[in-house]
Amino acid sequence: MRPAMSFYTVLLKLGRLAFEHLEKGNIMFYQEDLEQCGLDVTEASVYSGVCTEIFKRESVIFQKLVYCFVHLSIQEFLAAVYMFHCFTSRNTEVVEKFLKKHFTNLKIKVRKNLLQKENCETALQRFMKKVMKKSLSSKNGHLDLFVRFLHGLTLESNQRLLGGLLGQTEISPETIQRIINNLKEMNSDKISPERCINIFHCLTEMNDLSVYWEIQQFLKSENKSKKKLSETECSALAFMLQMSEEVLDELDLKKYNTTENGRLRLIPALGNCKKARLRDCSLSEFGCASLVSALKSNSSHLIELDLSYNKDLKDAGVKKVCAFLQTPFCKLQRLKLMSCSLSEKSCASLASALKSNPSHLTELDLRQNDLKDAGVKELCGFLQNPECKLQILKLESCKLSKSSCASLASALKSNPSHLTELDLRGNNLKESDVQQLQDLVKTLRWRSPSL
Image (cartoon, rainbow, N blue to C red; front, top):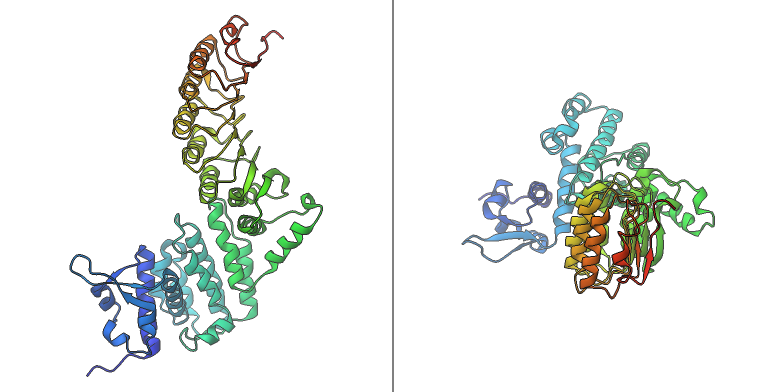
C-alpha cells in the first residue's frame, strides 16, 4: 500500500496545480492535470475534509470529469504559497521559468549564496520587485491577487500561521522595508492606471498603511494644491475616490500637484464623478484606454468629459473614447475635444459611435482641429439622425470651407429642432457661405474672417 501523503505535501501539490494553471489562465482541470502534479483526489479528500472544502468536482464535460477550486481566490492563494515555498527552498528552476527574461540571473545569485542570509534577502527583494513588474504588465490582471498574497507571505505573522509550509523564512525588518520602498518607487511609465492600484493593495498586505494615512490627511487639508503627490499616493487616492459612496461633482486632474504619470494614475477615479476634466494632461491613446476602462466600470454618473488641449490624443485616442460613447450605459451630455490634433478620421469614429447611442449628447466641442470638410460631412450623418439632441456644436478653426456649410444645412433640414449654437469662427468662410444656415439655427455665432 502506498503511504499517505502528509498534509503539507498535499497543500504544496495543490499549490503547484494552482500556480501552473493560474499562469495559463485556467480555472478548471482534468484528472491528468492532477496526476501530473502528483495528486490523487480520492486520497487527498481524507485529510480532515480540507481538500474537499477547497477543491470540488464539477459536471462532466466531453466524457471527462472536471475539477476546480471552490473560489478563484483559493487558487491564487495556494499558487502564492507554492511560489514562495519554491523561492525559500531554492527551487530556482520554477522561479526562473516563471520570471523568464525578467530575472535571468536569479539562479546563479541564489545558488552561490545559499548560506549567506544577507545575500538571500537581497535576492528576495529583487524577486518580489520582478514579480510585481510581471503582474503589472498583465493586460487582464490575472496575477494581481496572487501577487498580493505573495507580499503578505513575507510577514512573520502570516508565516507563523502556515507553520513550516513555507520553508526557512527568516526575513529581517530591514528587508521588509526595502520591499515596501520598492513598491512605492515602482516606475509606471507603460503600466495602465488600473494596474497600478494593485501596488497600493500590496502595501496594505504588508501592513504598510503610511500611504493610506497620508491620503486621509491630504483629503482633510485645505491647501491640497501645495502638497505634491507621489505616483503611489495618486494610486491610493484614485482607489479611495473610486470606492467612495459619494459621487464627486467634478474631478479636475490639473488641480493635483503631481507628475504626468501621477495624473494618469488618478484616472480610475473618474468613473465616480459627474464632470471629468483632463485638460492639458498629456493624455495619449494609452491614457484613453485606461480612461475608457474606468468609465465602463462605473460610468452612469458622468455627464461631462473635457479632454481639450491633449495634443497627443489624436485620432487613435478618440477612437478609444468612442468605445465608451457607443455603450448603452453612457449618459454623457457634454464632450470637449478642443485642440487634440484630430482629423476627419475622428469625426467618422464619433459619428459612428453617436449613431449607436445618440439621445444624450447636447454639446460637442471640436475647435482647433484639422477636421476639414470631409470631417464635417461625417458629423452630419449624426446630426440628421432623428434621435440626435445636439444643441451646441463648436467647429471654430477647423479648416472648413463653403462645402461644410452646405453639408450642415442639408443635415439640419432633416433635423432642425435642437441645434441652438453653431460656432464656425476662424474658418475660410464668407457671409454668403453661411447665409443658408441663418434660418436653420436659433443662435449663430459666426464672425467674418476680416473682423
